[in-house]
Length: 356
Ligand code: ASP
Image (tube, rainbow, N blue to C red; front, side, top):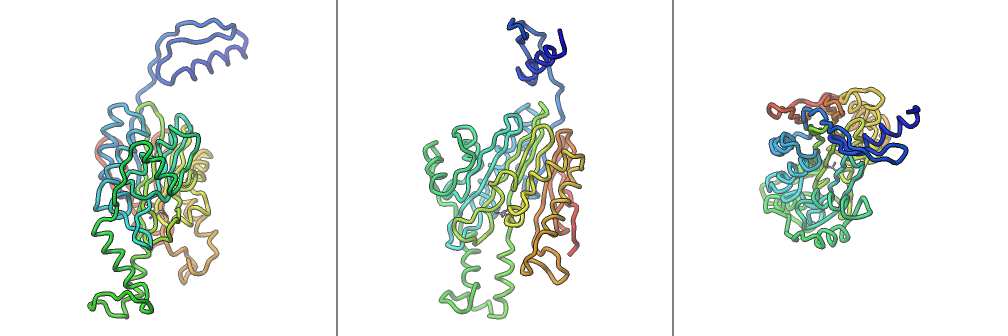
C-alpha cells in the first residue's frame, strides 16, 4: 500500500469507532472485517468548583460505570440545581433585581465537538438539561429568555417557581438596604450606617457550578450552570453560558471552566484561552493563572480596582487535560476547588494571584 493509501486506511479505522472496530473500507472500495480492538480504559477524573462536592459522588459513580463524561457531569450538577440550599444555582438561586430567578447554563461535548446553552431562562430548574437539548435537538448553540423557555416546554419541562423563601428574604433585605432615598424600609434593627456594608456584601455574592470530566474512553466534556450575579438587571447574561468564556472543551487537549465575576471573563474569553495555553504545554494551573493575570492586567476601570491597583473581585478557573492532569487558579486566595480521581472527592485551595 502506498503511503497515501495507508493514511486513508488508518483514518478510516480511527473514524469508524474509538473503542471497537468491526469493518474498514479500503481505498479501492472493498469493505473488510477488522479485528475488534478495545481501547485502554482511562482513569476517570472530575474537576470543578467548590460547591460541586455534592455532585462528584454521582459523577464518579457514572464515570466508573463507563458512562460518557457529558452524561456524568450533567447528572451531577442536576443534584445541585435541585438543591434549594445552594443559592447560586438552579432552584433556590438568588434572583434578579426584580426578585425573579433567571438561570444560565452551557454544556460542551468533547468527542462530538458540539455545545449547547441557555441564558436568562426562567421557571426551569435544570437549565443544564435544556442546554444539552439545544445541542442535540437544534441547529443552534444558544437560546435565550422566552425562546429558551418555550423550547424547554416543547420538550416537556414543567414551569415552576424557583424562588425559595430563603432566596426571597435575602433579595428583600438587599432591596430594603439598597438606598435610604426610596420607599423600602429595612427592619428597625438595621441602622442607616450599615447600609453600605450590607449592600456590598450582597452585591459580592457570586456562585456557579462548573464540572469538567474525563471518562473511561479518554473523552472530555464539561458543564457550567448558575443563577448568575445576584440582583442583576433582568436579562443580564454572564460568562457561564458563553462557549469559550464560562467553559470550553477540546477533546484533543483539555477542558476548562470558571466561576466568579462573569463580566471580567466575558471580556477575556478565559476558558478557551486556558485550553489553548494547555495545548501550548502549560499545566492546568499555569494556564488558569495566566487567565487570572490577563483579567487583572486588562482591567482599566478604577471602580473595579483596589487601592493597590489590583482587580477587586474574584474569578476562579478549573482545568483538566486529556492526560488527566488538573489544576485551578483564582484571583484571590481562600478560593477552593474540588477534584475526584477515583478514591474520594478532595477539596483543594486554588493557586492565587493575590492574598487578601
Ligand atoms: N460567573 C457567574 C456569572 O457571572 C457568577 C458566578 O460564578 O458567581 O454569571
